[in-house]
Image 1: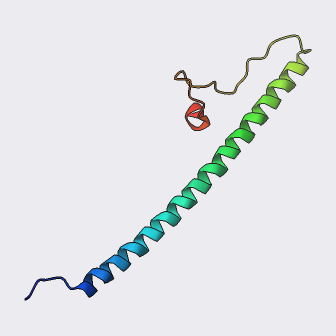
Image 2: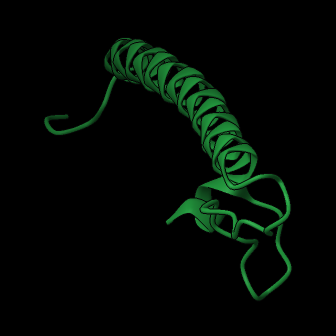
Length: 86
């Protein structure tokens, strides 16, 4: 009968799909690694901003409060640095 799938054809398709799934998992893993690296860079940049604020305060004699240039937490109270920075 024409038009019927064979078990072999289904297994071939399954192998193709499994290979695609592995590629997707690998891509997701790379993205998660990039996210981690960028988040670390953001923390480092925030630290540098804090140092600049401290230096400004020291130059001003240490008496004045220097308003921090670091973005505050979002109003929703979440502590997600990625959303806080955007």
